[in-house]
Length: 47
Image (cartoon, rainbow, N blue to C red; front, side, top):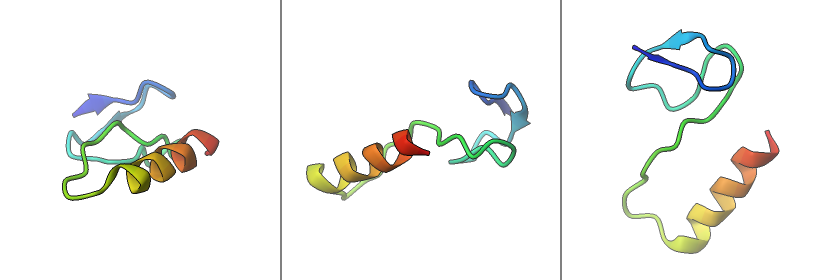
């Protein structure tokens, strides 16, 4: 289990997104080119 840095709730260690506040955890996505990663990062920041 790990704590969400945004809301403080405990979520599973393997979680990619907090189920309580929809915060996206920093994850490394293999086989994704840089422009796709930048677009995904921008989308996450807008949420």
